[in-house]
Image: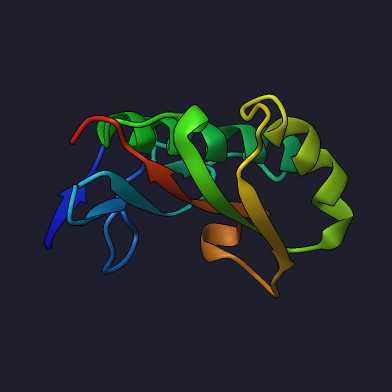
Length: 133
């Protein structure tokens, strides 16, 4: 088995000791994406404190890393959504449904005390990648 780092300049750089994504399996077709927060790659700034706008940016960042890894939203198998309050659950679901279609990936959503950079939402993913990036 090999481990291959995957990264995209169209998503924010990692803000700690981790990769944007890792491809790891015998066939090279599983892509594990680190959680994305709502940082705009071009500016390095976080989207203002509006959960809907932040969710859109998070999903745009995930799209960029998926693309760099040879995948897309249609190939996502699992996501985890982290929210600073479950009060944002409905708003994030509305945004999420604009990026994913049936059959939806399996998912967990959890509330946490806080997220990096003061974000209101963070999402990670596991995807199938037809191509090896």
